[in-house]
Length: 100
Image (cartoon, rainbow, N blue to C red; front, side, top):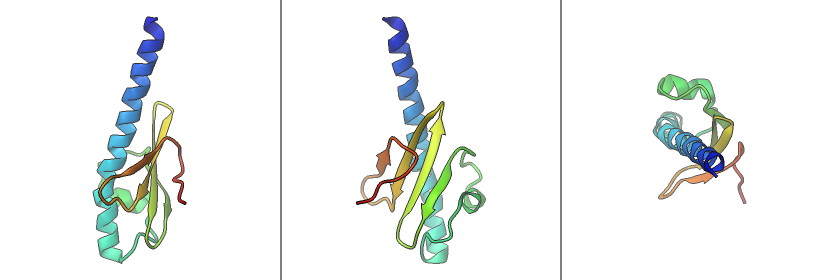
């Protein structure tokens, strides 16, 4: 009984860490948009140049004129964030952002 609960706790910690890191990267993404007029051309290296605190596991999956997708993995648990982020972030438990 204790082992499954412990793994569940660890998975939850990994999920929260990845989500927090994705949300923390959003201001750097918005700095890029403010400087360039869109998200197009944004990549992981440029994001890291804006904010060197961004972890090396976080990556820019896509960056188009009006939207972007970031992904991060912690302990094998991958999450992505679809942007732009308005009132609430759209975090997904997978490497790629799904858009309808």
